[in-house]
Length: 286
Ligand code: AMP
Ligand code: MN
Ligand code: MN
Ligand code: MN
Image (cartoon, rainbow, N blue to C red):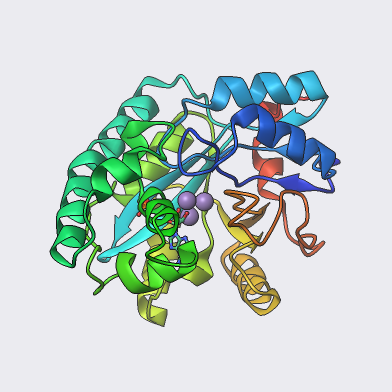
């Protein structure tokens, strides 16, 4: 058993679609009482060295992290990886391939937005990125708020960036088995991120979890900024039923946009096995 009582193992920096640098996030996590932290940028480990160095300077325990975009049954699913070797060649190549289509997708999104009268969205979104390979819908959302088209980013997603809306471009991300293998073969644990956010039928959700476990996945995010208390209880039951470990993470992106700050989540139910215990040997203690 590891001693951590305020683990926060899901957040984003300027290396993907967060607005704070890895060092600023480390300081914020530490100030908010986090005692085990992971930076989990989308499809990218380019911030890991900086996050680890900043955590160590603060005396904050650290696990490597990533959030991989996966396409499963036609839906985008996010798989968090924790405690892997961030220099693992197969993982690094897999992530590069997963990032690969983002610029072309962004051009298609901008063309669709131009068709409904919103010009300059490609350049506009790129203006907000810290890492051009990681241009995401979040950066388009920030552009549309900045130019006054919408009041906040959730209005942008509702009106423009979700399935059936004018700026939505379907995309094929990594395969579930590949993402789980990249993480586990690099020594880490794979975690189904924010499961309540997917619009699966019961059968599809069952298929997701069975395939995830068959590929070697071992944990599920139970307590996250994306879950209500009822949703956390539902996935705590799922963890018990399937014998999965449980993870905890705010999914913090920005002080202006995120409603759940680093280190402010409810505790994990005490009977669940913490996901970080599965990679205890890979925790960088301070
Ligand atoms: P992408 O990987 O480019 O499809 O962008 C996905 C990101 O968009 C997620 O990681 C969230 O940060 C953000 N996002 C998705 N849906 C919403 C929403 N409804 N409101 C605000 N942000 C969202
Ligand atoms: Mn994001
Ligand atoms: Mn996610
Ligand atoms: Mn996330």
